Length: 293
Length: 342
Image (cartoon, rainbow over all chains, first blue to last red; front, side, top):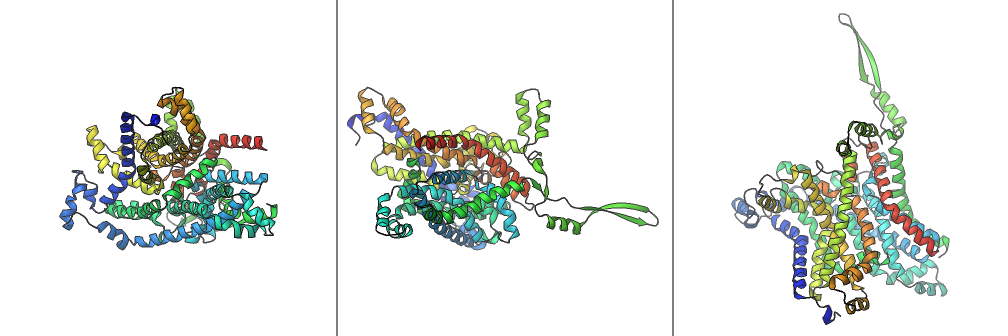
């Protein structure tokens, strides 16, 4: 590809590689540092006297007899029952992804196949909705949810997250469906299929790459949300992220910061695996919206 | 597609958005012009033979409850909440305007009003982070593009981490490092030669830390978009520029960047939308004493024992107006493009 004349001069090459190394350190080092530190006691991870304590684990050594300890994990998972919130998170994520893909696929398909002017307006409305900070809507949910006793339970949060997800899902699936040639379902209609049958038998079998990518982003939105889950879930039903935020209030005072550190590392692991397995889909999903404009 | 078929296909998603996005906006609008009922007071006269009569004011619980049940929305107050001290604070602003002699003094006075302080931080954050993200993303994309093929995948993997991470968790991870007892915090204290240097004590440092977090979190997004754009670079134009004697920098400036320009607009649009809602880092950094954003302002009203719905709603309405103003140039442009097409 790159011709000889475009090859980089050695000086520039070194500068670029140095820059990349610095950036990758900035991007990844905080996570590895926190992972490492989560197996120490608080006085090592937040060392006042000497920062190398965090590496050698001097206090951890003194307290537990070895350089690593699972005390933070034991504290958060067993003592504070963090596993409950992990289960809640996965329930919420599963149903959010399922529902938003089901209704989003139908909507995105319709938007990509209809040439009327209102599709443009629907997409623009979706864009405006996408721009709303979710927390501005939360004030509007509170009163009716309290009134009808819907506040605090998982199904309500799932539906709200699905709705907040829809604008983005619609845009993304719309652009994926536009890449599937119209002739495909039109020829099925010529053969006597209704629009829905054409969708069911011709489009569904070929749409999976786009749907999986969109699903990944729906998952991320549900998993990463803090504003909605912290406001709409009662204490027992909290998902991981608001629970970690709640730790900050209580454990800072009780000296159990390491519980929060262990919980944070636990919540990072699924995301780490996700990027490892689906890096290609995430990149293609990010770019799909951009290339279409 | 016929109108009727389209309608049935779009119905579920449209219903979800109507019920949980459009209606809440309406409900927020309505709530913002109603305030909770004040307690109904009742005067009771107590007469004791020796002391004489005293009147006591007590809260009439039954009447208060009856009133609250009769009108659950509260009492209509118009735009009163919008202009109170917690929001646009018209009277305070007018006072500050007449009392201060220069623009600087006026700005100082404004900074004491919570809403203007939140607005100042939100706008600063949005308009500092967005250009930095675009610049950093572009440089990373150019650098990764020059790497060996095998290393590219690895570089993309590690670059994606800060973007994919839950914002609150990412903020905490960074905060624990730059805390005065954390590894970076100690390093900075050592570099500055000041053992008392601490984020918690300095507004300026806190703003810098929050902006650093913002750039760290969003730069991978810009990078991935620009990197994808670089894969479709017109090689013939690059070669033509080279034959014409353009230096490497000139090729980047006059061929690569114009090619990426639509993507820059896209990234800027998404980033402005996302940075305007900055919220999680303020919770994660425990920064509310030094920096408040509009979203945090609403969160603060909604949380806690007393849920101040009216005040939160008024802030929400003002935030939505802010989003609308930020988006309007884009919307106008899209509308013109659309007009041209049809």
